Length: 186
Image 1 (cartoon, one colour):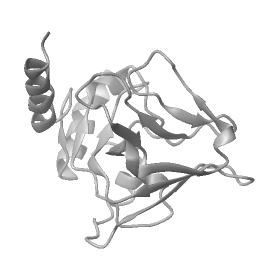
Image 2: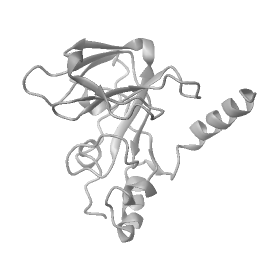
Image 3: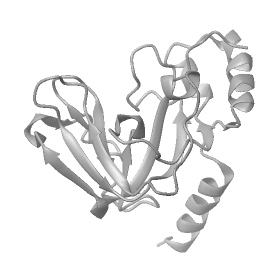
Image 4: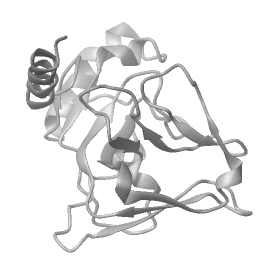
C-alpha cells in the first residue's frame, strides 16, 4: 500500500453518499469573512483528479472534484474575494484570493460540459454529498510531484478504495464527450 497521501477525503475513509443530501454551502479556508457558495441539489461525477489545474488541500496528490448545474450554484458571501485563476482555461476556476481555495469553476464556452460548474465537495459544511466514483488523470499526478515509481502503488490504492484509476475521465464521460463532439461538428 502506498504511503502517499492521496486526499484526506480518501485517506481518512470515504464518507457515504446520503440520499437525503439536497445541497449545501461550500466554504473557503479563510477564518475571517470566508467565501460561501450555495449548491442546490446533489453533485454529479465526483472523482479524484490528478491534474495540475485542480485545487488540492496541502499535502494531497489528488483533488476531489464534482460538478453541479451552473444555475444551482450561487455565491452567497464574500464574492468580492474571488478571482479567476486562468481566464484562458476551459474551466473558469474562481479561487479565494486570500486562502487560495478554488470555490467553483463554470464552463461557459461551447463544450460538452458547458453549463456545469466544477466544485470541490469536501468544502461543503454538510455531509452526504456524492462520494467519489473513480480516479481521473492519474498519470498527471507525476507532473504534480508524485514520483513515477510510486504510480503502481497509487493505482493499487485507488483500486482498493473502489475507485477505478484512469488516465482520462471514466469511460461513460469519455463516451459522452465523443458523442457530443460528433453531434456538434460544423
